[in-house]
Image (cartoon, rainbow, N blue to C red; front, side, top):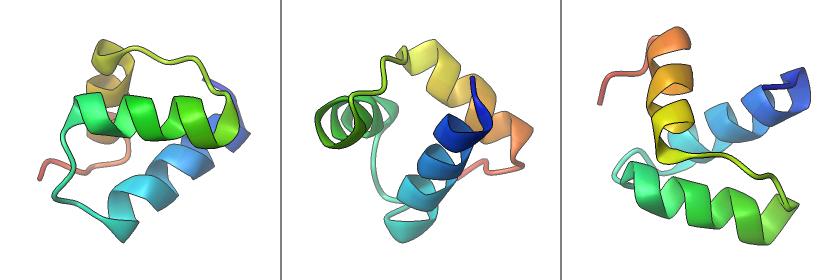
Length: 52
């Protein structure tokens, strides 16, 4: 994942940490056109030390 994608993911997760991985994927796809899987969201959240 690119740095810009990581920043967008981190911003999305921090803004609303009640979201499921599926809804994060939908949000990123519709708002940014970023193609990402739910597994990648889990992996990236773990990488940024977000386990909520």
